[in-house]
Image 1 (cartoon, rainbow, N blue to C red):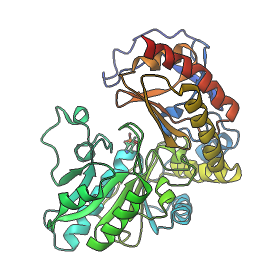
Image 2 (image 1 turned 120 degrees about the vertical axis):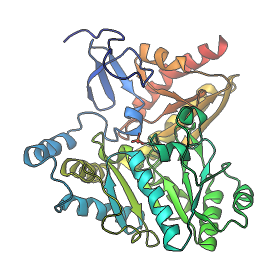
Image 3 (image 1 turned 90 degrees about the horizontal axis):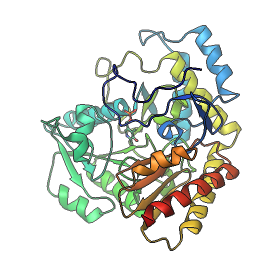
Image 4 (image 1 turned 180 degrees about the vertical axis):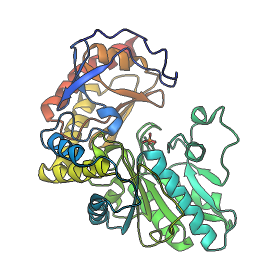
Amino acid sequence: MPAFIEAASPHTMNTYGRLPIALSHGQGCRVWDVNGKPYLDALGGIAVNTLGHNHPKLVPALQDQISKIIHSCNYYHVPNQEKLAAKLVELSGMTNVFFCSTGLEANEAALKLARKFGHDKGIEKPEIVVYEKAFHGRSIATLSATGNEKVQKGFGPLVEGFIRVPLNDVEGLRKATEGNPNVVAVFMETIQGEGGVNPMRIEYLQQVRELCDERDWLLMIDEVQCGMGRTGKWFAHQWAGIKPDVMPLAKGLGSGVPIGAVVAGPKAANIFQPGNHGTTFGGNPLAMRAGVETIRIMEEDDLMENAARVGAHLKGALEQALAGTSGLKEIRGQGLMIGVELTKACGALTQRAADKGLLISVTADTVIRLVPPLIMTTVEADEVVSILVPLIQQFLAE
Ligand SMILES: *Cc1c(COP(=O)(O)O)cnc(C)c1O
């Protein structure tokens, strides 16, 4: 195998602050770099590799699909679109699905749905409620919905028609929208991912659902990161016993094959008509097979239950090992979506963890984010703790 040459990327755009690591292959929750160094994967390609790496049930299914047809296009029916849509409808209690290829595309479709929902009601300038610290993607519309100036800086003018509110503050939401007839939707992540693993409270989700019903607004819940079983329910909002009207999905839905979906309930399912929206790659046979097989394997192997159990174990072990550590702000999250917030910026920990053979990320400057594959075992979770905790303690003591 060729040795990896550090910083040898003269031809790709300089869009990422990359670590000097190139991964070669993986098995389960373990990956190896091109130099043969092993790592425990607690990042899962940013909440994407639901089934880990080289899954013995997924790989043969994808090989079978590749040998049959990879792409056909939406001029024709794609049978697995209907199959995956039916499954998502069953799991969400919603009614119809549009397929695309990424998270931002799913959110872009949701924003278009909300605007057309407004126009269909005679609202010429529809406005959508979005949140502080939210992340919805990097297209011009989704970065405008995002609540992070770093993401927006240099790309103005931003798309108009957004009203920004703080998390978990229903009075704030009422105030910000009071007397405004142009509001058409509330758009949120159940647990903010990039913003620092910030959960919306159960009562807040219920209150927003009620308010949306009362005002005839769409409740649109971005489950791109927190969905697909990661929190121990299929979709994180299900912990609150509510249903959204629109739910964008992506990341974990295809276990690494690019895929996105917008799931709609009765209030939003018939807004798009032929010609209103589309995408070339969306719903292609390879992506659809990946989605169908991911959910099938998750059900067969009880991976949602595993995410809940191993996630609770991991969080508990971190809480115990870090109890009383000065410089630790909070450990939060649900299932296998865990954030460890420190009182100082800790981006340096990603390299230090990698040096010790652990892949993690740091988001919102101060939050260590763990979003491993849903196949992680408690033994592997203990290994995460045994590598990470001393690194955190040492870092905070510096
Ligand atoms: C990652 C993410 C997105 C954007 O997804 P892309 O596939 O990178 O476009 C949108 N919303 C949330 C909540 C995400 O975590």
